[in-house]
Image 1 (cartoon, rainbow, N blue to C red):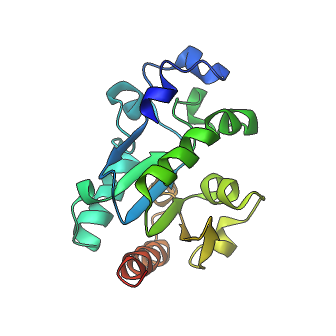
Image 2: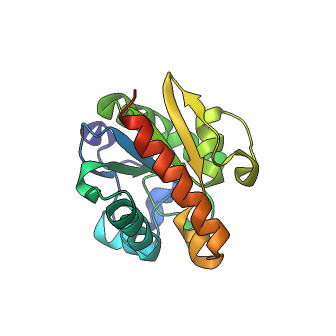
Image 3: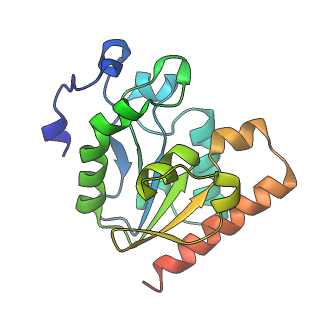
Amino acid sequence: MREVLGDCTRCPLHEGRTQIVFGDGDPAADLMFVGEGPGEQEDLRGIPFCGRAGELLTSMIEKGLEIPRSSVYICNLVKCRPPGNRTPLPAEVGACRGFLDGQIEAVRPKVIVTLGKPAISTLLGRDVAITRLRGTWQEYRGIPVMPTLHPAYLLRQYTPENRRKVWEDLKAAHTRTRSV
């Protein structure tokens, strides 16, 4: 899929990027995380979730689930940074959709964890409220999906309750990888 992506110019996001941020981790991972889009640090380094939100996600994976980050696969809906870290527009998500689907098909995860509203809304094909849907099992092409809050949201709204919710979601997803 990375080769097919090439030096993509399918949407206007390519005009402001430093580089394409494809995905990172085990290409045969049981657990896949899907976020929204690269931020500034991700654009500079070419690695998804390597900024502050990524540090929190890595901590939740490594300290919470007690598995190395390298054992999961992490990617985003769009592969180029939206200006000002805004939510990707539907046309931008659409331009990258085939690559996301290709990543999911290539990795063949047992469970997908979506991080934030845009990721779960895209996979389900409808607008959803993440605060209502998080923590409930969904399905995408036969793969169990656990929607949870985005780590960037946790950084802004870091309460014991939000932390507990995400921890429960990640534990449920990790447990499910062993039973699928």
